Length: 291
Image 1 (tube, rainbow, N blue to C red):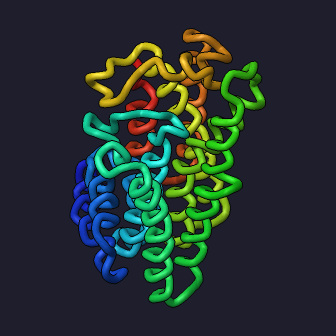
Image 2 (image 1 turned 90 degrees about the horizontal axis):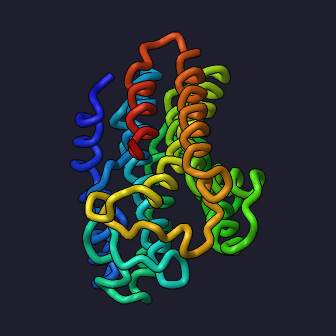
């Protein structure tokens, strides 16, 4: 296993050229896509994909196109999240959101472009493989990003603003809006590396619990975080009447649930007969950001 920094470097080196093989993308569309894609960040989802492929003794190089595509999908979701019709946020990672830099119309198209480009990048990579591994990995990512996954969660999130939070609704939003796109890299890596069913289930359980805990930490940061450090506004959940975990359980209850899900994630990944220190340490780091 490599370090987080080593996987991150692989992603950062591959991302700038990820769009190059798709043909000539007109300006300002390409400019807007690259503006958001190169805005930095933890690159958590592609790093998870590469690390899981490595853990399962698969090819990290073979997994790279899927990792880049996953970052494209995540970036498209952030562009659309920031739009006035969604979360209406002017800042992303400490600089103007895409719609502030390029206008709403181009920002919408940049998000659309990144999603379609991600599918094309994955299918190009899958077409060069000698089995259906790549196709199944692409399918897993697109499904978890789609109308039964992330988009489903986002839909419930925006349409239920201002309603009474229930455990069922809040869990549904968190599980799909956030956890699906953190489970996707693990499921994709399992397909790429030829994991057995038990290995796949352990990875999926880890992703589901880490994803829930990750969003709980975000909900806490919206209440207690520093806007200067986060690079975006805080306090928006309460202002918009979002069905957040804090709205449902309060700050202390959310902390308790976060620690429970973190423990579940670590227990799930530990069932693999491998050195999973990278994943258990990452779970702790990701889900204690509110401290």
